[in-house]
Every structure is written in C-alpha cells, then in structure tokens.
Amino acid sequence: DVKVTQSSRYLVKRTGEKVFLECVQDMDHENMFWYRQDPGLGLRLIYFSYDVKMKEKGDIPEGYSVSREKKERFSLILESASTNQTSMYLCASSIRQMAYGYTFGSGTRLTVV
Amino acid sequence: DQQVKQNSPSLSVQEGRISILNCDYTNSMFDYFLWYKKYPAEGPTFLISISSIKDKNEDGRFTVFLNKSAKHLSLHIVPSQPGDSAVYFCAASESGSARQLTFGSGTQLTVLP
Image 1 (spheres, rainbow over the protein chains, first blue to last red):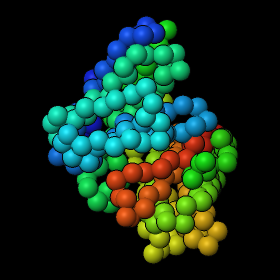
Image 2: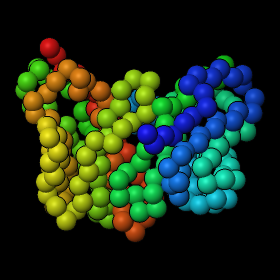
Image 3: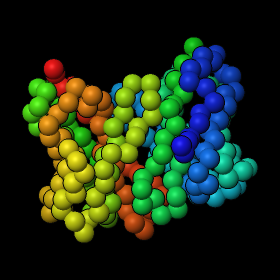
C-alpha cells in the first residue's frame, strides 16, 4: 500500500522555537507539497518541490522554509514558530503529470503556545 | 483572491437522498478538476476527477459535472450514506502547470440516518 508518512500526528511547540515537520513518501513521486488547513480557508499551499534540491514558493511561504535532499523526503521548517502558525499541516506527493491527483499524509496538528 | 470557491460551508442530507456539492472557479486556464474527501484526523483522499474535455464523469455513486461556460462544477452523491459524512474539497489545476492544485475551502457534508 502506497504511503505518505508524516512523522508526528500532534506537536506542541513554544513561540520562537525552530520546528521541523518531516514527510516521507514511498511511491517514487517527483512532486511533493506542503499545505496548511485552517477552518474556512481550506488548504493553502506553502511550498512545493518537483525534484531533489528544487523548491518553489506557494501562496503563503512567509515564515517557512523547506528542504528536499532526497527524493522521498520533504521537510517543512518553521524558523521561529509563532502562534499564527498553529494549524493542521498536510504533506502530499504526486507523479510529475499529476494525472491521478495527490496522495496526502495523515497530517500534523501543530499547536504553538 | 480565491480562485476556487465553495460557497456552502456545510450541507445536511437525509440518508438515501442525493447530495449535491458545488464549486465555482475564476481561472479560465484551469482544465483539470478533482474532488477530495477528508475525515477528521486523516489526510484528504482522492475521490473523482474530470478533465475539461468532458462535462461528466461517473464512478459508482459519485458523479462530477463540469459546466465550463459557467466555470462551475458539482459533485453528486446518490444515494447518500452516513459514511459519506466528511469534508469535501474541490481542487483545480492548469495542465501547463500540472504540479499544483488550488483547493476550495471545503464543504462539511453530514448525512443523517
């Protein structure tokens, strides 16, 4: 069964901490994405990557960075966590042509206090 | 500016009846549309898709209709079942930029027994 695995289901971090969210896929997909989901706003794209060491900004990249050193792993980094980054974070992957849409991970619920 | 809009945050339907979820888009370059279903504490899962060369796609109880002139798509679920209760997101992409999906804000469907 193909999978996108996010390392943590729930995280609680303090304001100002550096936070790492990890995502691993086992489908040899080229594309990987980080979204956040907030009530009434749906899923908003933070960053995406279409190849190793490649990254592109999405709609809301401010306060975030990403790393893709290996094809299967895509990390989201909150450089200095703030309370407005409390959210559900969803990682996804897809084949290059995206003909079949994304496969999502189960999400990480991050609370910044 | 939201390019994909789901104007109904919630919808309640009686078991056995038809559920109709609606989605509007503003970007005329979108040519591929998808619906995802999301249960609490899980990532979204792909449900059904449609290309702009079609106006209807059917998969079991689920049918997606596309009206390009109105920039409108809808998802019909017949008959609705309690297990269909979830948040439904519509999403769209441009084939020239087939790496990104733009999501709507979601509609919470509740199917009442």
